[in-house]
Length: 298
Image (cartoon, rainbow, N blue to C red; front, side, top):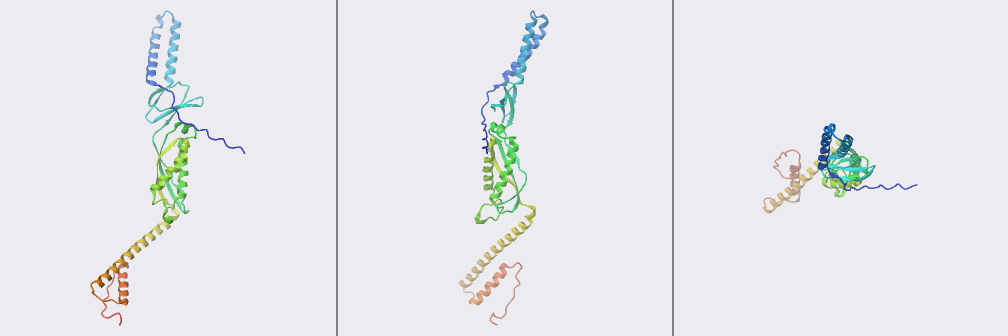
């Protein structure tokens, strides 16, 4: 089976063009000269020579006008001749090149793209919805025009591919062994997304300045279950904090009673006090005091 031919890479180089301002003035001067000759034609001694001069003047002016083009800041034009790439002109203003050279304008300005919301699976297999905002620009016009078809569409497709790859590397949340997650480690995820995307679009002469997640959520079919899970985890965390605080308060109360010699407690009474205090401090409802007039031994 034959080996596929390698891609012929194109690199940007400067085109040899001319400032268009002086040539525009020359073309206007030739047009004015042609009009003056036309007005003098009736009194001319050699009318044939004068007509020939008028034709030459108009042809030269016409060639000059056809070769003029203008560039704005952060705009360029790729010059070709019969399909051969001759270079790129990045100099703003009025420029000139022979009209039979092909000219293709390409913007060098920063572009902002918001990807479509994709439904993908995270590292743990949970379906999630994800989208990103990517800031990019063209840095090599030769590669952008001649190494890929429609570089803007190429970038959009690579954004989707990179998002799917990134989602498979991270869990949405609740990762094991303190691994980074999509929700909790946005900066790390964005940095990896930018790195992966830059690798994919380098062939198109494109630089990715920034890439960040703009949307992240569980898919609709599991969103309700995951919400209940998060609520349960929140309740457990709150209970754990309450119990920890209650134990510290009970310990402090027993130490204070012992240090001040307020009451002597044996093990059974100490256990009863601990139990009562924990019930009061950890209960969901207000405690109802009960006055005991006897002893715990009767």
